[in-house]
Image 1 (cartoon, helix red, strand yellow):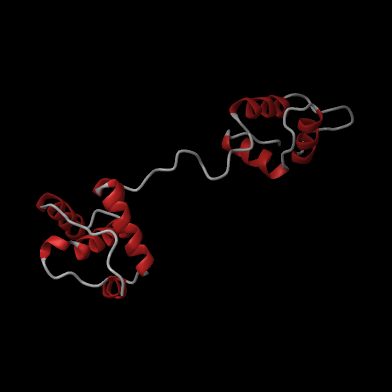
Image 2 (image 1 turned 90 degrees about the horizontal axis):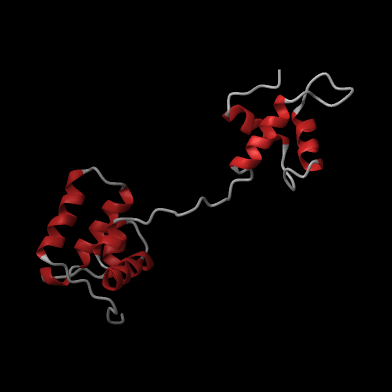
Length: 153
């Protein structure tokens, strides 16, 4: 077994904060597990468990323990406990507000010659034809209309 590269030294205030997180029950399971890992890794308390033992007891991998100790040493307690919020959604929305407005205006207009009403597929083809969007599915148009409490009937 090689020596620990990132050793965790918790101050009394940090230990108290982590103990409150573990005992209070108002945090996510991930945050509680991270707090338990840091409490187990604390070098200031005297006897420290091996990473393998901590991993087995807390049902995590040793890689997780190494990453958490590295993050604590490099970035501090807040970055380990308070998880980052995502800046943008994982998939960008297909229809922006401007595109939505144009499609809604199109759906509220009278249907083309020879048609008695709009269908989702007809809206899809006309929206692409009029270059409102490069491509869009009829399902997306249906969700967009539903979101704005509109119906084609």
